Length: 92
Image: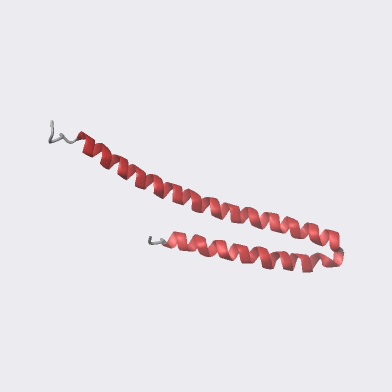
């Protein structure tokens, strides 16, 4: 199945987002470690939570697009079935 440019872009952004989570968590932890272990872990978990929320948004956009394309395909099939049922049958 051919992927559209939008699908490729969403896939790329999803990969970049996961890299951002990993690198950003490490940088956040290293930046706040001077305050102590507990605040550093708290800030890191907050960062991870926010970043995972953004990944969830990207995934929901992708799923919504897939659902929309599937509904278009199903509508075309249903219209074809309706047209075939409307045609006068040769047996009658």
